[in-house]
Length: 278
Image (cartoon, rainbow, N blue to C red; front, side):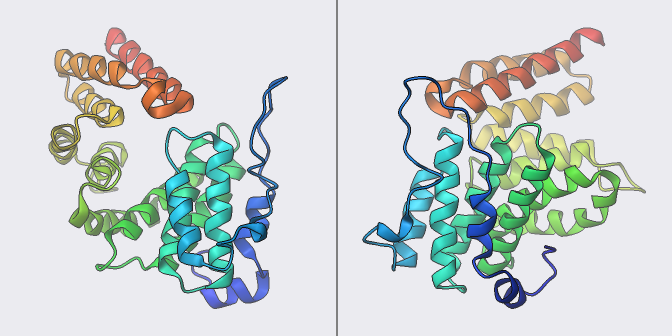
């Protein structure tokens, strides 16, 4: 369902929209003898806070960490969606849902349909929270989710880039979100987008923003990975390798979880191969 459809119509025609979409998530394989919480089937109505949207949103935010298993992130989505089903204008719950939706979509591998479905939930939720000057965090998660949709659409999604850029610029009012996320994401967007006159791509802007990101948040591996990418494009291979080495040593599963540790280290290996080929 397109984000341009009014929020009122979305809920009127779809009922518990978010709950229905989330309930169809593919469940991860459970290893023999492994005991896991019932993230996908647990009855939220049984919780003593089930009638308190703000409390549900608070727990959703606490559970939705990068290091969390996919099922836990989905459960965070379920909590936030349940809160919105009770209070469709609850901006706190909507923001929690947009954040959780992005982290779920970003953790799914190879299933473009599922990634897009979750990202669309995140975009709709961000609009409920308020994608405007007063809400930098909603702007940030709107941009992330919209970016995943654009990635799935290829050239057909380019027309959405100005809206994403504008949201990220607003998000920079709170540059500490997600380890300098607004700075990092805008920086990589300038690197990946087509250059003028067909696009907004700008290597100098990318280098400047990504250097700011590693300076502002030197604990986050992806800041160094993205900065290294820009440095490679600038033919500064020595400095790129230095940043990749820092990123590799930071990308430990003890902090970021197994999924992101493997993903980021694989990205680092690919960038090193790119340097070696040049």
